[in-house]
Every structure is written in C-alpha cells, then in structure tokens.
Amino acid sequence: MCGRAEGHGLIRHLSICEVDLLRKVGRNDPCPCGSGRKYKTCCGIYHAGIRYPDTVEQLIRSRYTAYAIGDVNYLYRTTHPSNEAVVGKTEEQYKRETLLYCQRVDFTGLTIHSTEPEDEGGIAHGTLTARYRIAGGPEDFFTERSEFVRVDGRLLYLNGTEIETPAADD
Image 1 (spheres, one colour):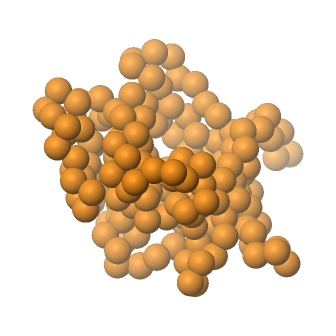
Image 2 (cartoon, helix red, strand yellow; image 1 turned 180 degrees about the vertical axis):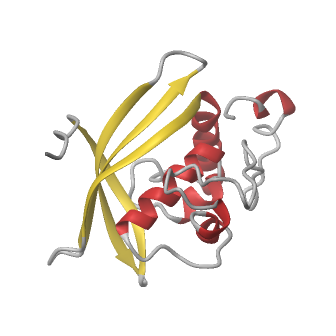
C-alpha cells in the first residue's frame, strides 16, 4: 500500500537507477489493473522488461499498475520526455515526486472506456477512469483522455486531460 515507505527513508535514499516498490505484488496475485489475469502474465511482463506494451490498452493497464505498486522506474521509462511531469527535471527528481504521489494515493480500480490507434499525426488515444483513495478517505475517481505517441517503435504516455466521465454504454 502507498504511504508506508516514507518512514523507512526510501525517499531520502532514492537511487536514480532503482527504486523499491511501495507495494509488493506476487507473481501469482491478481494484477492490480483489474484484467482478471495473474500479475506475471499481465502487467508484470512489462514491468520486468520482458516485453513492451504494443497497444494503448496494455500501456494504460501497465502504467496504472505501476502507480498502484509504486514502480516509478517503469513510469519514467514509459513517459514521453516532453510530458510536463518530466520537463526540466532530472530522472531522480521525477522519480522522487512520483513516489511521493504513489505514497499518498491508494489506487482501487481502473476502467478503460475506449482506445484508439495512432491517427495520421502518430497520436493514439485512450479514455480511462481511475478510482483511488487518499489517506484512508472516501474513494474518489478521475477520468482522463490520454495521448500516446510511438518513439523508436514504443508507445509512450504523452499527456492527459481530465474530462467528464463518459456515459455508460447502452
């Protein structure tokens, strides 16, 4: 769970190359992304670097799970360098800020509403709702329309805009 590592000095001793996960997830545990698959055959293969996400859905799910477990190394690797969370920061600064965020937020569920492949400009889109809880408070959510771009054959998170929750499918 997010929030426990702070007292153990994890932030003060953060290495640029490696960060311990805030929440351990077992290889045979259900994947936090909600796919119904085991972590090792779902987002775990991307986090371990065995494969790279080929689709927008895979990248959304694997990034959500990385936030849920505090895998800031993966989040850094899958964020486009022009993203506002990265611009003007060192890798270590980005990871520290992201880890602090993960410590405060307990991600409780993901819904992917839609995905769209790359358009003529090379931008792919996805719309998602992430549910979360902060410091034991009530569950809340945000809905985001995300943009992704392929660089050297790999999809990267470019940016996202918070939107109203899409209407339920009829």
